[in-house]
Amino acid sequence: MIGFLIGNPSYPTYQVFLGVLIAAVLTASLMPMFIRLMKSGGIGQQIRADGPQRHLIKQGTPTMGGLVMLVCVVLTCIIMVPWTPDMTCAMIAMLLTGSLGLADDIASVAHKRSLGLTPAQKMVGLVAISVAFCLAAVNWVGIPPTVRFPGGFFIDLGIFTTTVGSGPGAIQIPWLYMLFVFLLMAGLSNAVNLTDGLDGLAGGTVLMAMLGMGMVAFGYGELPLAVFAASIAGACIGFLWHNCYPASIFMGDTGSLALGAAFAACGVLTKTEVTSLVMGGLFVVEALSVIIQVLWFKKTGNRVFLMAPIHHHFEKMGWSENKVVIRFWIISAAFTALGFALYFQLG
Image (cartoon, one colour):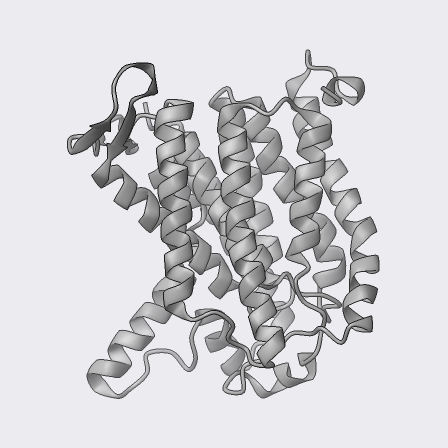
């Protein structure tokens, strides 16, 4: 593999850090060309009409920068490590979800509205991707259909399993675990997508979470998966160079859905599904704020937050965009540290 030409496999930590660097440099270097391409084609982000008024100046900012990020992650992994089954599963899940996000971005740009695909269309795509990923993880990678909790206990979600075929080619379909994986992957994909509402917010928080996940994968003994997570963190660094306020490019659903799915896939493949929710705690908070807002408004006609997702609530309170972003980065780093600490309690 090419990786052995630039990284000595005798020093795996070196390969992980080099993965961060390569992905960061590639993304930062290729993004200006992509920005020019989007501008020349008049392809830009459509801003919510009901959002903060100061966001209207962002109308037309080039989007779909996530496409460059995904390409750079793939290139980094090709360069750095052999493609093991677990890393390949995570990579395919990320790329398929990114393709779904790309379709959503293209529909949004084509119809010149902030919404692209319908929720039903997105859900069908996420169901298909998560089911395929779960079956591959269980039958190809050999991931047990269990969920581990800090403290050493676990829940076996493989108790209702259907076996299709016989012999070495038999396929196990763990129905409960498949449902759990769908909820995790769809939930985190949409949660990262909801977080992607301010310049630098999603890029910085995904950076924190994927650095933590890279350390988890390294501790789990999966170097290629650790490099995969590290390369996503590196791509976020390169992206932030152009996405920091005022942003020159947005990642779009192409990036946010894909990165959320990649994070969930790493959680499944390292058997840290529960602690991954802690590491990605900020994404969970963002998603919960929307759920609470919608349910409470339907029940009472009143709002809990000035605006949801919750980062807009603080904007409405008068916080500057940079203040919200930096403080949310700090909170995300704290969640990541807590999740990484709990990882050592899994037993």
